[in-house]
Length: 284
Image 1 (cartoon, rainbow, N blue to C red):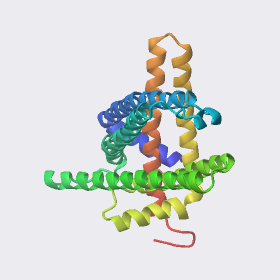
Image 2: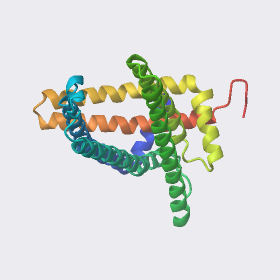
Image 3: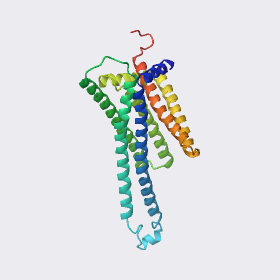
Image 4: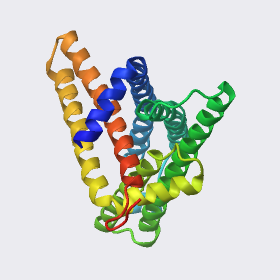
């Protein structure tokens, strides 16, 4: 851990401008994700409440229904609210996918460039080709993780609704879905740290080695880095809720953003070391 810290500190000193760009870029990505989420989730919640309120006003009296009174005066408002809610959910997920694969992909590219060892200058065309290859690696990894998570969640929840509607089991399956998505995200991070691999085969082998064979290092490191980000996020929350000082709020925001950037740098550097380290008993 100390060796990774010294290596990253040296890289930051040598590439100060790139490090500052990563912080600014991370701020923009967080702002974009927050704006998209707030904009769409507000509409989703509003339309959900509209559907529920109209259902609450429905006629549940069996005698009145037998007498010819309808369950609802009109299904059109509910259908309209449902359609708007569904459209906003789809748009929200698409925007998140675009931001994660585009903006976040550039951040991972910059992070890989910052921790990479300096090499002899190559041609402009070769550099652009390498950057495009790395970015495509990240985009495909993001799309794969995104689609796998959505399909997994939908299948588990849908099976509970149609085959086993018990509420306790539904909650259990939702928790299980999130646990499996967390497992997928762990391997997504392992593979993303190897996105500079020359081929998909090399990327997959290095990611599996660091994530599985070196999991006793990778998992505790991920927990430490996640804890540091959560701690910085908690300080930012306190600044938002209790501080009237713009300076304190600004510093808390910069601390939280910097912690995400530094955690990514530490993770990439550590994963490179773990994927290249020989097994016990092996020698180079």
